[in-house]
Length: 213
Image 1 (cartoon, rainbow, N blue to C red):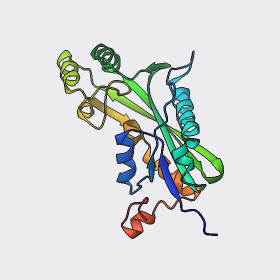
Image 2: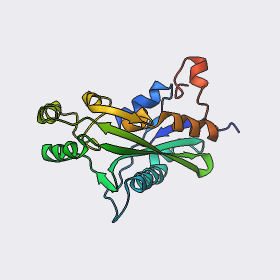
Image 3: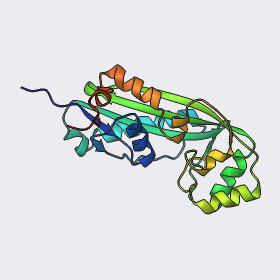
Image 4: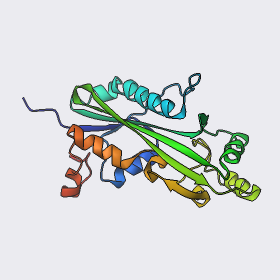
């Protein structure tokens, strides 16, 4: 009996995470977002919050019918990114007032971005990495904040900014992983996949996406 083909699943609806994977030649066979309650627990740190949510997303996605239908030879990736200022979790901004509050907090200060990737390999072998990146913003003027609010890029973003867009002009210093701040630490993701036996570099040799037949 032939072995089931290898399949890659990304448990996320984020176009940014998909673009990052494609940047290194990895094309998921299935995009399967997993909705979980993202409310922080009492006294939960930003790092712990990121690790917990990424793990919960992986667990939920793994048992979804669309994923189970792919067969047993599945490599599933889930991720979560959290912005923290000290022990404080800076939330996703959904309103202009929330965005202004977030940007005002980050103005002229260093903050940390915690990006966790979880890999579930065949046999439910699970591994994870949490990448911590330090980001320092310049001191934001009222015009800076007003202009960024008008751009709309902040909406639904952790910390009310997207570093891959206009907000990169605010960054004085970044120590760590740029891709992690966008939403998926590429070095760690590729390392986990390769270590678990996924043919990461097959697409590089064939000139095709990893999800191509």
